[in-house]
Image 1: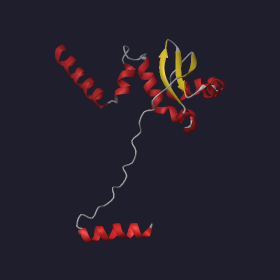
Image 2: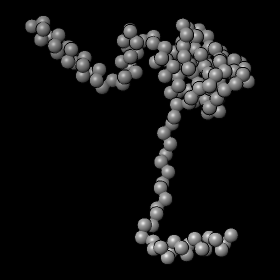
Image 3: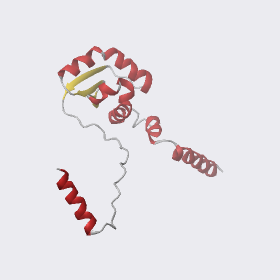
Image 4: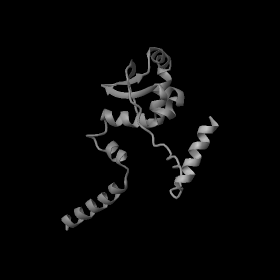
Length: 146
């Protein structure tokens, strides 16, 4: 009787876990709950919403060391700008993403922004049925126009 009950419980647990998003599963599991790369991914994904478009183009969260978030910035001037915003940034990260860091360090280093999917440009239609005479007329017209 107990085996049957455990099997049903496992199947019910399995059904709900398959439907959950992966990040929620990681957040619940104690082994993955405090993994720094998951925090960095979460920050990178929401970085533009946190700091704005202009500042997001010039910075990117790159890693976590112990309790310190490390953000790569374009140059020292942007590092100074972010340093002035440190308390506000820490509070915004805690409020919006529910991530808590003791400190933030800004380093001037090269970073690659995650590539965004751009809208596909419409392809130019090429008339394959044009005759050689039409092509030659267009070429001569272009040459005479110059």
